[in-house]
Every structure is written in structure tokens, then in C-alpha cells.
Length: 358
Image (cartoon, rainbow, N blue to C red; front, side, top):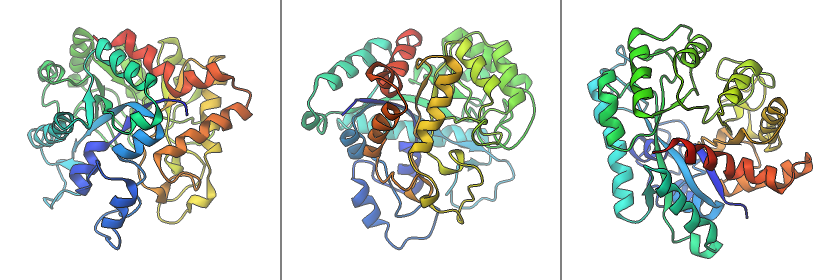
């Protein structure tokens, strides 16, 4: 089993919003949620800390996933939207507190520096599969939408709290940039925030960024850039996907692009609630990885950024995190050798974060 470095997960989001115990197995979670219909994806869990250990996931970027929608109805929160940035700030800190208590219990290890990452990976890589079942999973804290950063000057406090990677926007507009489903440039605050990121050494994650904000960010920001969970527009049209030119710009900057498992990003025409998992398999994930590698001319910029949600919108042959291992043979069938597959499974993310973490 190849060890995996996963570029994107949402452990705290599902714990706090779904009241889902991430120390339980997927089977246990789904048994507890059987028959529940209060929100999309109940009873379809595919990921948790035990599943990550069984799958060989030694390190994952895992998010603080909160955004602001000032017209959101003041209902009990079952989504990411909050009415003010102060409330988003508070909720994101709740997610951060969840990671911290998991660390206190030995479930995860929060990674702030390259030295800590190297130590975590060495422990993970030299352990047996049985020993890994008792080890903490390494977590690099990311932020999926910068709205919890109330103002640009607050970025330094988040950095001191261990935040290392940030997306300026998510779906819709944030106070800093345009995101998926909308168009537009960076805001004046977005320009100011990028200057703070550059000063701090924060990694800019261009996932979810609209095309105009994407290119402006690259022009204004000279620090490290990635796309933690993105697929290819050439294979599946849509503004959530990266065009070949965008992929090329990230490659030029030494970025890494994590392939994501959401079915609607894997095959054209997927409709939530109508399309069925049987319409897509893990081969489609390998296709998107291969496309990035073909554009780069090598395997040094493609990786995994699974964004594992529910099995109701994942490939039909993906039931738990362990099925990420199916990419091994799928890539080998496409002519990738062991070094290439290691690059994609973990080495590309490791080498990027070795360069860019403090």
C-alpha cells in the first residue's frame, strides 16, 4: 500500500455541521445516520480518521470551511453561510478547536512547520500498516474561503494560530475575491490580504477562485500557490474546473494540483440528486491526473486532493478512503512507473510543503 498525502479534506466541517464523530469508522457513522434526511449526504459517509489510517493517508490538508452570506436566513446552521464576518470568525475557530482537541487525544498531529511534517511522514512511512492504525494523522490547517479573516491585518493572528493555506473565496463572492459560480476581480481588501499573505509566507490556494480573480492573484502575488482540489476544464467544462492555461500558469509557478473525487467534476453532465454513482468510476480521476501530467510533460505537479464527501456523489467504485489506492493500478495501466505514482500519491505535496512551510 502506497502512503498518501491528501491535499484537501473537511474533517472539522463534517464533525461540527453534521455532528459526525470523525473518530468512528464510516460504517459506524452511517449506521448512526440511517434514515436521517435533515441534510444532504446523511448515511453516505466515506471518510473519517480510522478510514484515513486504513487507506494509508499520513498527512492531509484539512479545512476550516466557513463563508459569509449576509442575506442568509437566520436558521440553525446546516451549511457554510454566516451573516457576518465576526460570526464566520467564531465558527472557524470552533473548527480549529476541534482539530486541537483531536490532537490532545492523539487522533491527529497538527503540522505548522516543515520539520514537523518531515517527522510525521518519517514515522508514518516506516510504520507497518498495522502500526498506522494507532498513529495520529498529520493535519495541515487550511481555510476554504477567507471570510473568517475579518480584515487583512488579522491574517497574522491566524498564522500564529497555525493556519498555513487559504482560498480567497468559495462559492459566490467573498469580501476578498470572486469564487465559483460568479465572476469578478479581487476586491481592494483582497489585494491588501495578498500583500499580508506574501509578508507572512501564507500559501495561496486558488481552488474555487473565479477566472478573473485567479489571474489577478497570480499577477499580484509572488508567494507559493497551489490548487488543492481541482480538475480539468478540458475534460469537464465549468468554471469550477481549471483551463489548460490556468494549469500551465500553476505549473510555471511550481504549484501542485490535487485531483478531486466529486462526480460532477469528473464527468460532464452530472446532476446532483438525479445522476447516479454508476455513471462514473475511479478511472475518471486517473484521467484528470493524466491530463495535468501531459500538460506538464512530467508527473511533478499532479496529486490527490480528494475532497471526500458522500458515496452518493462519488464514483461507484469508491466506498471508503481506502479506494484511493485503486489509483495505483489505474495509473500503472496508463504507463506511469513507480516513481511517477509516488509523486502523485505523496511526493509532490511533500516536496512543495518542504519548500513552503516555515
